[in-house]
Length: 152
Image (cartoon, rainbow, N blue to C red; front, top):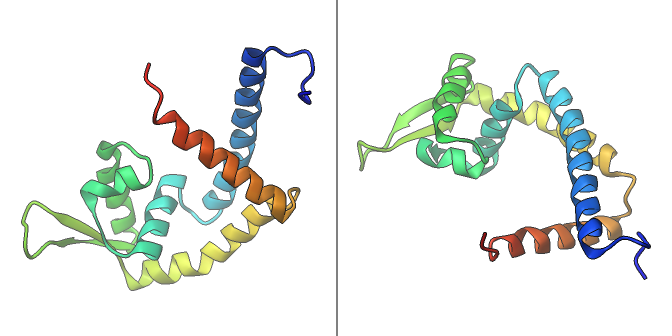
């Protein structure tokens, strides 16, 4: 029997959506608050974190990797470049491709703040046991992957 006794399958799906949405909202707000305390917005942080962990990236691919519209990438890259955290580097083999590459200053900055970000996320998630986190990861991954197969 379902924990949510008395709910139809459709109502249970709706309830799951609402609970997921609310959980995501409060976790995002907490994360964004921490990020803004470092003088960045969430998109700037995401770009820096991507470059820090994955190395230089073609500007054209950054948006899809951090789930951002490509038109916004130029604006974010401009802001981070003005702060001295990244630079644009032309591809020597293809003039159509420009990379964003983290600078030494950007590397030090994100290297200094990223551990605090991870600690904050760990604190937020500490209500769950390691086993519950594993289960949540598996279930949410299953849900996300299955959605690609749906057609509307």
